[in-house]
Image (tube, rainbow, N blue to C red; front, side, top):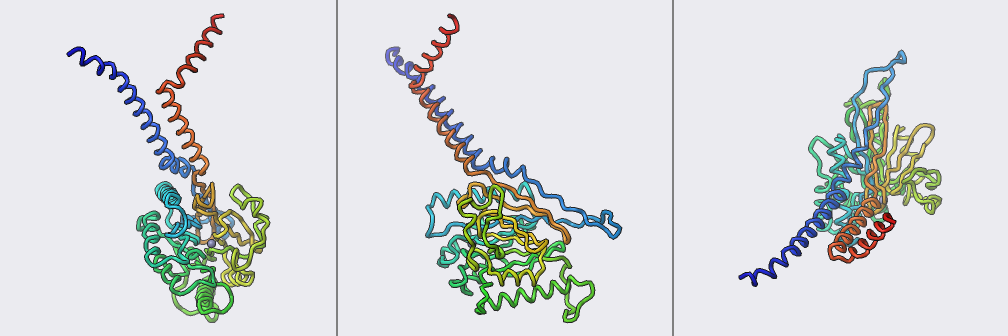
Length: 396
Ligand SMILES: [Zn+2]
């Protein structure tokens, strides 16, 4: 009996050591996964705060009664991969990252409305009805939100194609997912959502329809902004009297990104490349028309994937919002806006840097290898040799 138990007893410490190693490896792996796939989003987004809006000044120059503030989140170019492009792992990873970032931001920051400034989907321009339905289902899961939070989107060239390939079918299917209304008013703030690809200015049916609709909205907004109702204004319901915020995919015309600065501006080798009208930015005519028609107080746009701030005229600020996807940038971000009918304040909230996450994974893999080598004994001899050398050195 004793002879049979002998070898098993000998194996017991070995099995125990293997069990301990397995436990250590599992613990390190789980801790790293938990950090990189969940906690890092909370740690990074927790540092973002809503900007303070200046209180209005009353007629005596003192502080007036504070107006209600709308908290809005602006993000751009999510480019959800479709059925044709991109590796499945790339798709899985990018979508998981955007889902975690959006859900964490919703939970921590509690915005009232989120706007996506176009290129929500990567392949909306050519996807089949089935592929489109799949993309939309994934989008709805990733960007799920409670009913009191509004989610609005403007169309981008990847959603409905550039002008030369755009058609009513693609526009309608995009508008069935997102609200088709061009004007969105909430808490006394007017947002005008523009279809940039329909501002080609060539008089095509879609372009004429878009221009007519925008012109009609600008007329209603201008009527509401006048204290005394000017001639030609109908007696219908007045809109909030505040200057609108323009939301669009293509930026208003600018020559290039040369004057853009900041850590997430276009890289130096791309900055000076001139922009093509109707492709990289809106045409000069279309940009001028939008500025004349709406006299906006703020413009937000996407499409370039990089950040930029441009001043049109004396006071109209345009903010180019960088891409929200790690597929396009190492440091994606979104804009947090506190808006009242008369004032606004913006700040940028960065998402975790992809490099940080990748370095963490590399360090973790290194630790796992080290633990395994130590266990196997490959590292014990050099370590023991070093320790002995140290002791010898100390005693002499
Ligand atoms: Zn685009």
